[in-house]
Amino acid sequence: MSFDVASAREQFPILKREVNGRPLIYLDSAASAQKPRAVIEAMTRAMEHSYANVHRGLHTLANETTEAYEKARESVRGLVNAASVDEIVFTKSATEAINLVASAFGQSLEAGDEIVLSVMEHHANIVPWHFLRERKGLVLKFVPVTEDGQLDLDAYRNLIGPKTRMVALSHMSNVLGTINPAKELVEIAHAAGVPVLLDGCQAIVHARVDVQALDVDFYAFSGHKLYGPTGIGVLYGKAERLAALPPYQGGGEMIGTVTTETVTYADPPHRFEAGTPAILEAIGLGAAIDWLQGFDREAIAAHERALYDRLKQRLNGANWLREIGTAPGKGGIFAFTVEGAHAHDVAQLLDRYGIAVRAGTHCAEPLMRRFGLTSSARASFALYNTLEEADAFAEALAKVQTFFA
Image (cartoon, rainbow, N blue to C red):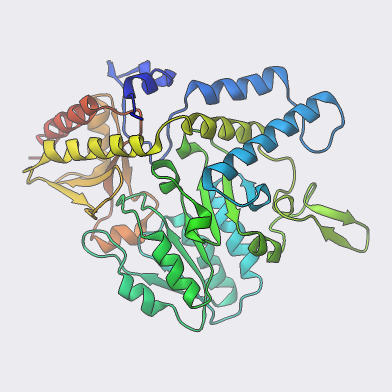
Protein backbone atom coordinates (compact mmCIF):
# COMPACT_ATOMS: atom_id res chain seq x y z
CA MET A 1 0.00 0.00 0.00
CA SER A 2 1.49 3.34 -1.05
CA PHE A 3 1.07 6.81 0.39
CA ASP A 4 -0.35 9.66 -1.71
CA VAL A 5 0.83 12.89 -0.08
CA ALA A 6 -1.17 15.11 -2.45
CA SER A 7 -4.40 13.36 -1.48
CA ALA A 8 -3.52 13.58 2.21
CA ARG A 9 -2.78 17.31 1.95
CA GLU A 10 -6.24 17.93 0.53
CA GLN A 11 -7.67 16.88 3.88
CA PHE A 12 -5.95 19.75 5.75
CA PRO A 13 -7.74 23.06 5.08
CA ILE A 14 -5.03 25.17 6.73
CA LEU A 15 -2.40 24.08 4.22
CA LYS A 16 -4.15 26.16 1.56
CA ARG A 17 -3.38 29.45 3.29
CA GLU A 18 -0.47 31.80 2.69
CA VAL A 19 1.93 33.35 5.20
CA ASN A 20 3.65 36.61 4.33
CA GLY A 21 2.44 36.28 0.75
CA ARG A 22 3.90 32.79 0.31
CA PRO A 23 2.39 29.31 0.50
CA LEU A 24 2.54 27.96 4.03
CA ILE A 25 5.25 25.37 4.63
CA TYR A 26 4.51 23.98 8.07
CA LEU A 27 7.55 22.31 9.64
CA ASP A 28 6.51 22.54 13.28
CA SER A 29 4.49 19.35 13.66
CA ALA A 30 6.66 18.00 16.49
CA ALA A 31 5.24 20.84 18.57
CA SER A 32 1.67 20.47 17.31
CA ALA A 33 0.35 18.93 14.10
CA GLN A 34 -2.34 20.39 11.86
CA LYS A 35 -5.85 18.89 11.84
CA PRO A 36 -7.59 17.03 9.03
CA ARG A 37 -11.22 17.64 8.13
CA ALA A 38 -12.15 14.33 9.77
CA VAL A 39 -11.24 15.77 13.17
CA ILE A 40 -12.75 19.19 12.57
CA GLU A 41 -16.02 17.70 11.33
CA ALA A 42 -16.26 15.11 14.13
CA MET A 43 -15.97 17.78 16.81
CA THR A 44 -18.33 20.12 15.00
CA ARG A 45 -20.87 17.33 14.52
CA ALA A 46 -20.72 16.46 18.22
CA MET A 47 -21.36 20.09 19.21
CA GLU A 48 -24.11 20.68 16.65
CA HIS A 49 -26.04 17.43 16.87
CA SER A 50 -25.29 15.37 19.95
CA TYR A 51 -23.67 16.96 22.99
CA ALA A 52 -24.24 16.37 26.70
CA ASN A 53 -22.16 15.36 29.68
CA VAL A 54 -21.02 11.75 29.70
CA HIS A 55 -21.75 8.79 31.97
CA ARG A 56 -24.24 10.66 34.15
CA GLY A 57 -27.42 11.05 32.15
CA LEU A 58 -30.20 8.76 31.03
CA HIS A 59 -31.45 10.89 28.17
CA THR A 60 -30.69 10.39 24.49
CA LEU A 61 -28.03 13.07 24.09
CA ALA A 62 -26.13 11.86 27.14
CA ASN A 63 -26.20 8.29 25.85
CA GLU A 64 -25.06 9.32 22.37
CA THR A 65 -22.21 11.42 23.71
CA THR A 66 -21.10 8.72 26.13
CA GLU A 67 -21.07 6.22 23.30
CA ALA A 68 -18.90 8.52 21.16
CA TYR A 69 -16.57 9.23 24.08
CA GLU A 70 -16.08 5.56 24.89
CA LYS A 71 -15.72 4.71 21.21
CA ALA A 72 -12.72 7.05 21.21
CA ARG A 73 -11.26 5.06 24.11
CA GLU A 74 -11.58 1.92 22.00
CA SER A 75 -9.83 3.68 19.12
CA VAL A 76 -6.93 4.49 21.44
CA ARG A 77 -6.86 0.91 22.70
CA GLY A 78 -6.60 -0.36 19.15
CA LEU A 79 -3.90 2.15 18.24
CA VAL A 80 -1.54 0.92 20.97
CA ASN A 81 -2.86 -2.67 21.14
CA ALA A 82 -3.76 -2.48 24.82
CA ALA A 83 -5.39 -5.59 26.27
CA SER A 84 -8.46 -3.68 27.45
CA VAL A 85 -10.09 -0.27 27.27
CA ASP A 86 -9.78 -0.23 31.06
CA GLU A 87 -6.05 0.32 30.55
CA ILE A 88 -6.69 3.61 28.70
CA VAL A 89 -6.95 6.76 30.81
CA PHE A 90 -7.90 10.06 29.21
CA THR A 91 -5.98 13.06 30.54
CA LYS A 92 -5.75 16.66 29.41
CA SER A 93 -2.25 16.11 27.96
CA ALA A 94 0.77 13.84 27.99
CA THR A 95 2.16 16.18 30.63
CA GLU A 96 -0.77 15.41 32.91
CA ALA A 97 -0.40 11.68 32.17
CA ILE A 98 3.22 11.73 33.35
CA ASN A 99 2.31 13.89 36.36
CA LEU A 100 -0.42 11.39 37.21
CA VAL A 101 2.05 8.52 37.35
CA ALA A 102 4.71 10.51 39.21
CA SER A 103 2.24 11.84 41.78
CA ALA A 104 0.32 8.63 42.39
CA PHE A 105 3.28 6.25 42.20
CA GLY A 106 5.38 8.66 44.22
CA GLN A 107 3.09 8.45 47.23
CA SER A 108 4.67 5.11 48.19
CA LEU A 109 8.28 6.22 47.69
CA GLU A 110 10.76 7.25 50.36
CA ALA A 111 13.87 9.42 50.65
CA GLY A 112 16.77 7.85 48.84
CA ASP A 113 14.65 5.99 46.30
CA GLU A 114 15.88 6.52 42.75
CA ILE A 115 14.26 7.44 39.44
CA VAL A 116 16.19 6.85 36.21
CA LEU A 117 15.62 9.43 33.46
CA SER A 118 17.76 10.57 30.53
CA VAL A 119 19.41 13.78 29.41
CA MET A 120 17.21 13.85 26.29
CA GLU A 121 13.90 14.05 28.17
CA HIS A 122 11.28 16.74 27.60
CA HIS A 123 10.68 18.86 30.69
CA ALA A 124 7.32 17.10 31.07
CA ASN A 125 9.26 13.95 31.94
CA ILE A 126 11.75 15.70 34.23
CA VAL A 127 9.93 18.29 36.31
CA PRO A 128 7.30 15.94 37.85
CA TRP A 129 10.14 13.77 39.14
CA HIS A 130 11.94 16.86 40.46
CA PHE A 131 8.81 17.50 42.52
CA LEU A 132 9.44 14.17 44.23
CA ARG A 133 13.11 15.02 44.68
CA GLU A 134 12.19 18.30 46.35
CA ARG A 135 9.33 17.00 48.47
CA LYS A 136 10.37 13.47 49.37
CA GLY A 137 14.14 13.37 48.95
CA LEU A 138 14.19 11.08 45.91
CA VAL A 139 17.36 10.81 43.82
CA LEU A 140 17.22 11.43 40.07
CA LYS A 141 19.75 9.71 37.84
CA PHE A 142 20.20 10.64 34.18
CA VAL A 143 21.31 8.41 31.33
CA PRO A 144 23.88 10.32 29.25
CA VAL A 145 23.53 10.91 25.51
CA THR A 146 26.25 10.14 22.98
CA GLU A 147 27.59 12.69 20.52
CA ASP A 148 25.32 11.45 17.73
CA GLY A 149 22.27 11.57 20.01
CA GLN A 150 21.82 8.02 21.27
CA LEU A 151 21.28 6.83 24.82
CA ASP A 152 24.38 5.32 26.39
CA LEU A 153 23.03 1.83 27.03
CA ASP A 154 26.00 0.71 29.12
CA ALA A 155 25.52 3.71 31.40
CA TYR A 156 21.79 2.95 31.54
CA ARG A 157 22.43 -0.59 32.75
CA ASN A 158 24.80 0.69 35.40
CA LEU A 159 22.36 3.31 36.68
CA ILE A 160 19.71 0.73 37.57
CA GLY A 161 20.33 -0.52 41.08
CA PRO A 162 18.62 -1.81 44.21
CA LYS A 163 17.11 1.59 44.98
CA THR A 164 15.70 2.21 41.48
CA ARG A 165 11.93 2.50 41.68
CA MET A 166 11.00 3.75 38.20
CA VAL A 167 12.54 4.23 34.77
CA ALA A 168 10.96 7.08 32.76
CA LEU A 169 12.34 7.62 29.26
CA SER A 170 11.40 9.09 25.91
CA HIS A 171 10.51 6.63 23.16
CA MET A 172 11.55 9.21 20.56
CA SER A 173 13.37 12.48 21.25
CA ASN A 174 11.47 15.64 20.36
CA VAL A 175 14.77 17.39 19.55
CA LEU A 176 17.13 14.75 18.20
CA GLY A 177 14.59 12.57 16.46
CA THR A 178 16.36 9.57 18.01
CA ILE A 179 14.13 6.51 18.27
CA ASN A 180 15.24 4.72 21.39
CA PRO A 181 15.30 0.89 21.61
CA ALA A 182 12.21 0.80 23.78
CA LYS A 183 11.83 -2.97 24.05
CA GLU A 184 15.45 -3.38 25.14
CA LEU A 185 15.13 -0.55 27.64
CA VAL A 186 12.06 -2.19 29.15
CA GLU A 187 13.71 -5.62 29.29
CA ILE A 188 16.75 -4.26 31.11
CA ALA A 189 14.59 -2.50 33.69
CA HIS A 190 12.25 -5.44 34.17
CA ALA A 191 15.19 -7.77 34.74
CA ALA A 192 15.84 -5.66 37.84
CA GLY A 193 12.16 -5.60 38.81
CA VAL A 194 11.73 -1.93 37.87
CA PRO A 195 8.63 -0.59 36.07
CA VAL A 196 8.98 1.62 33.00
CA LEU A 197 7.11 4.69 31.77
CA LEU A 198 7.68 5.75 28.17
CA ASP A 199 6.96 9.24 26.86
CA GLY A 200 5.51 8.37 23.47
CA CYS A 201 4.48 11.83 22.25
CA GLN A 202 6.69 11.69 19.17
CA ALA A 203 6.93 7.94 18.57
CA ILE A 204 3.16 7.37 18.49
CA VAL A 205 2.94 9.68 15.47
CA HIS A 206 5.70 8.17 13.38
CA ALA A 207 5.66 4.46 14.17
CA ARG A 208 3.35 1.65 15.19
CA VAL A 209 3.32 1.19 18.95
CA ASP A 210 2.33 -2.12 20.54
CA VAL A 211 2.36 -1.76 24.31
CA GLN A 212 1.90 -5.49 24.82
CA ALA A 213 4.87 -6.33 22.61
CA LEU A 214 6.95 -3.69 24.38
CA ASP A 215 5.72 -5.01 27.75
CA VAL A 216 5.86 -1.39 28.98
CA ASP A 217 4.11 -0.54 32.24
CA PHE A 218 3.00 3.00 31.36
CA TYR A 219 2.88 4.83 28.02
CA ALA A 220 1.92 8.50 27.67
CA PHE A 221 1.12 10.57 24.60
CA SER A 222 -0.82 13.66 23.54
CA GLY A 223 -3.60 14.16 21.02
CA HIS A 224 -2.48 17.37 19.36
CA LYS A 225 0.73 15.91 17.91
CA LEU A 226 -1.30 12.98 16.54
CA TYR A 227 -3.40 15.20 14.25
CA GLY A 228 -6.03 15.50 16.98
CA PRO A 229 -7.10 18.44 19.16
CA THR A 230 -5.35 20.04 22.08
CA GLY A 231 -6.59 19.44 25.61
CA ILE A 232 -6.53 15.64 25.39
CA GLY A 233 -3.84 13.14 26.28
CA VAL A 234 -3.60 9.45 27.03
CA LEU A 235 -2.05 7.33 29.71
CA TYR A 236 -1.84 3.63 29.00
CA GLY A 237 -1.13 1.53 32.07
CA LYS A 238 -1.05 -2.20 32.59
CA ALA A 239 -4.20 -3.20 34.45
CA GLU A 240 -2.33 -4.31 37.56
CA ARG A 241 -0.23 -1.13 37.60
CA LEU A 242 -3.24 1.16 37.37
CA ALA A 243 -5.11 -0.85 40.00
CA ALA A 244 -2.22 -0.34 42.42
CA LEU A 245 -2.19 3.46 42.03
CA PRO A 246 -4.14 5.76 44.34
CA PRO A 247 -6.26 8.53 42.76
CA TYR A 248 -4.50 11.53 41.30
CA GLN A 249 -7.38 14.01 41.68
CA GLY A 250 -10.69 13.92 43.53
CA GLY A 251 -14.16 14.79 42.30
CA GLY A 252 -17.05 13.37 40.39
CA GLU A 253 -16.83 10.14 38.38
CA MET A 254 -13.70 8.81 40.12
CA ILE A 255 -15.53 7.62 43.23
CA GLY A 256 -17.31 4.47 44.32
CA THR A 257 -19.23 5.91 47.24
CA VAL A 258 -18.91 9.07 49.32
CA THR A 259 -20.18 9.66 52.84
CA THR A 260 -19.35 12.29 55.41
CA GLU A 261 -16.94 9.81 57.01
CA THR A 262 -15.50 7.76 54.14
CA VAL A 263 -14.82 7.57 50.43
CA THR A 264 -14.21 4.64 48.11
CA TYR A 265 -12.81 4.87 44.62
CA ALA A 266 -13.83 3.64 41.19
CA ASP A 267 -11.81 1.12 39.28
CA PRO A 268 -9.46 2.32 36.52
CA PRO A 269 -9.71 4.07 34.19
CA HIS A 270 -12.44 6.20 35.79
CA ARG A 271 -10.50 6.42 39.04
CA PHE A 272 -8.15 8.78 37.22
CA GLU A 273 -10.74 10.83 35.31
CA ALA A 274 -12.13 13.15 37.97
CA GLY A 275 -14.73 15.69 36.90
CA THR A 276 -16.18 16.40 33.50
CA PRO A 277 -13.61 15.11 31.00
CA ALA A 278 -12.47 16.63 27.72
CA ILE A 279 -15.47 15.16 25.90
CA LEU A 280 -15.23 16.89 22.54
CA GLU A 281 -11.45 16.59 22.52
CA ALA A 282 -11.62 12.85 23.15
CA ILE A 283 -14.09 12.49 20.29
CA GLY A 284 -11.71 14.50 18.11
CA LEU A 285 -8.79 12.30 19.12
CA GLY A 286 -10.80 9.20 18.27
CA ALA A 287 -11.54 10.67 14.84
CA ALA A 288 -7.85 11.48 14.31
CA ILE A 289 -6.83 7.92 15.17
CA ASP A 290 -9.50 6.36 12.95
CA TRP A 291 -8.40 8.66 10.12
CA LEU A 292 -4.71 7.89 10.59
CA GLN A 293 -5.32 4.17 10.79
CA GLY A 294 -6.77 4.35 7.29
CA PHE A 295 -3.24 4.85 5.94
CA ASP A 296 -0.34 2.47 5.60
CA ARG A 297 1.73 3.58 8.59
CA GLU A 298 4.90 2.05 7.19
CA ALA A 299 4.41 3.95 3.94
CA ILE A 300 4.00 7.20 5.90
CA ALA A 301 7.20 6.48 7.84
CA ALA A 302 9.05 5.88 4.57
CA HIS A 303 7.67 9.15 3.17
CA GLU A 304 8.79 11.10 6.24
CA ARG A 305 12.23 9.51 6.10
CA ALA A 306 12.50 10.47 2.42
CA LEU A 307 11.77 14.09 3.38
CA TYR A 308 14.57 14.06 5.96
CA ASP A 309 17.00 12.41 3.53
CA ARG A 310 16.11 14.95 0.82
CA LEU A 311 16.79 17.83 3.21
CA LYS A 312 20.13 16.33 4.28
CA GLN A 313 21.09 15.91 0.63
CA ARG A 314 20.24 19.52 -0.20
CA LEU A 315 22.19 20.84 2.79
CA ASN A 316 25.20 18.60 2.30
CA GLY A 317 28.41 20.61 2.49
CA ALA A 318 26.89 23.60 4.26
CA ASN A 319 29.77 24.36 6.64
CA TRP A 320 27.74 27.08 8.37
CA LEU A 321 25.19 24.54 9.61
CA ARG A 322 25.30 22.18 12.59
CA GLU A 323 22.75 19.40 12.93
CA ILE A 324 21.93 18.27 16.46
CA GLY A 325 21.32 14.52 16.54
CA THR A 326 22.41 12.14 13.80
CA ALA A 327 21.50 8.77 15.31
CA PRO A 328 20.96 5.94 12.80
CA GLY A 329 17.30 5.36 11.95
CA LYS A 330 16.17 8.63 13.51
CA GLY A 331 12.78 10.13 12.75
CA GLY A 332 11.95 13.14 10.59
CA ILE A 333 13.18 15.84 12.96
CA PHE A 334 16.00 18.19 11.98
CA ALA A 335 17.36 20.30 14.85
CA PHE A 336 20.10 22.70 13.84
CA THR A 337 22.06 25.88 14.45
CA VAL A 338 23.34 28.41 11.94
CA GLU A 339 26.81 29.79 12.57
CA GLY A 340 26.70 33.31 13.99
CA ALA A 341 22.91 33.35 14.35
CA HIS A 342 20.49 32.97 17.22
CA ALA A 343 17.82 30.35 16.61
CA HIS A 344 15.04 32.88 17.19
CA ASP A 345 16.40 35.11 14.41
CA VAL A 346 16.66 32.14 12.05
CA ALA A 347 13.03 31.18 12.73
CA GLN A 348 11.77 34.71 12.19
CA LEU A 349 13.62 35.08 8.91
CA LEU A 350 12.33 31.71 7.69
CA ASP A 351 8.83 32.93 8.48
CA ARG A 352 9.29 35.62 5.81
CA TYR A 353 9.40 32.75 3.32
CA GLY A 354 6.22 31.23 4.76
CA ILE A 355 8.18 28.51 6.57
CA ALA A 356 7.20 27.66 10.15
CA VAL A 357 9.88 26.09 12.34
CA ARG A 358 10.35 25.97 16.10
CA ALA A 359 13.18 27.77 17.93
CA GLY A 360 14.37 27.76 21.53
CA THR A 361 15.23 25.02 24.01
CA HIS A 362 12.30 22.80 22.93
CA CYS A 363 11.56 22.16 26.62
CA ALA A 364 14.78 20.14 26.80
CA GLU A 365 17.32 22.33 28.60
CA PRO A 366 19.50 19.46 29.90
CA LEU A 367 19.88 18.25 26.31
CA MET A 368 20.76 21.73 25.09
CA ARG A 369 23.46 21.97 27.73
CA ARG A 370 24.75 18.53 26.74
CA PHE A 371 25.49 19.91 23.27
CA GLY A 372 26.78 23.26 24.52
CA LEU A 373 23.78 25.23 23.28
CA THR A 374 21.36 27.77 24.68
CA SER A 375 18.90 27.20 21.83
CA SER A 376 18.45 25.61 18.43
CA ALA A 377 15.99 25.72 15.56
CA ARG A 378 13.97 22.65 14.63
CA ALA A 379 12.18 21.58 11.47
CA SER A 380 9.90 18.58 11.90
CA PHE A 381 8.21 16.66 9.12
CA ALA A 382 4.70 15.22 9.06
CA LEU A 383 2.78 13.12 6.57
CA TYR A 384 1.49 16.22 4.76
CA ASN A 385 4.92 17.65 3.89
CA THR A 386 6.35 17.24 0.40
CA LEU A 387 9.76 16.88 -1.21
CA GLU A 388 9.19 20.28 -2.80
CA GLU A 389 8.75 21.76 0.67
CA ALA A 390 11.98 20.13 1.83
CA ASP A 391 13.71 21.74 -1.18
CA ALA A 392 12.13 25.13 -0.45
CA PHE A 393 13.22 24.95 3.18
CA ALA A 394 16.82 24.18 2.19
CA GLU A 395 16.84 27.06 -0.29
CA ALA A 396 15.35 29.51 2.20
CA LEU A 397 17.78 28.43 4.91
CA ALA A 398 20.71 29.11 2.58
CA LYS A 399 19.34 32.61 1.96
CA VAL A 400 18.80 33.20 5.67
CA GLN A 401 22.40 32.23 6.36
CA THR A 402 23.67 35.09 4.23
CA PHE A 403 22.27 37.56 6.79
CA PHE A 404 24.82 36.27 9.30
CA ALA A 405 27.79 35.48 7.05
